Amino acid sequence: MDTQNTVGTLYIVATPIGNSRDMTERGREILETADIIAAEDTRRSVVLLNKLGIRGNALSANHKFNEYGKARYFIEQMQQGKNIAVITDAGTPCISDPGNELIKAAIEAGIRVVGIPGCCAAVTALSISGFDLSTFLFYGFFPRETADRRRVLSMMRKGDTRTYAFYESPKRIMSVIDFFLEENAGLKLCLCNDMTKLHEMTFRGSPAEVKEQLLAKGNYEKGEYAFVAEVCEDYLLKEVEHISSPEALLVDCMVQNDCTAKDAIKLLLKDENNTYSKNELYAAHLALKERFG
Image 1 (spheres, rainbow, N blue to C red):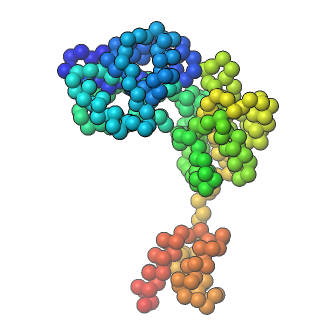
Image 2: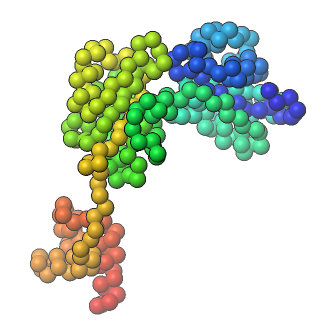
Image 3: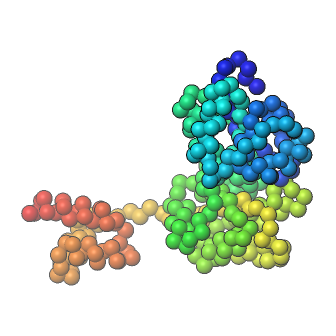
């Protein structure tokens, strides 16, 4: 621990995602000597600390419902010279978990922030996926609403990377797989359940193949999931090369339908073969007005 500064240090400590033996020696040392351990769920953290043989530290709740107000308290404690270690229920703090508000506040207050690396469910799932990891995107929890899910799927099809990592609860995992099936999503999946634990399982294949594996497992609604999706080459949305300019398309539509430019824009936006956006068509309309009055 840093004893030379009169101001304390904020340590962001990664904890095991299942197997307590994955706790690093450095992480254990920080937790043993920290003045305060800021935990997402103190009840779950006590279990881990007991397994690690760590006693006597002041545990303080730092969950998503109190992190704004609690950050002020933690900053005051560090300004008085106390060292604080932040932990989440499992894995690396702030990765789809509380902690960012405290880190931002500490940086603004000039307090040193130190990361203590270790387990991260998303990175572990990516590492065993077998997919292209030259680039990847971690999204967090997959959306619940259908419209949001379609937006994410569209983003995946248009993106520069083909590999995406998500978290999902066991209660919604089948809903996600069914969504992929309903959308005929061209994806390869790697679903990781209860990673590092005794009964960890990995499900691989197309959405249809993964669903079959989940049903065969039977009790798939238990344990947390991290899953990785790789977009198949033929499912990617290629950038369309426009043959006609938006101005030419707009004029052509006006002539064919004997309508105004505004009506032509509405018609073109309904046309599934049109690849120009609303803004592009309106810009074309303004350009035509400037040129021809």
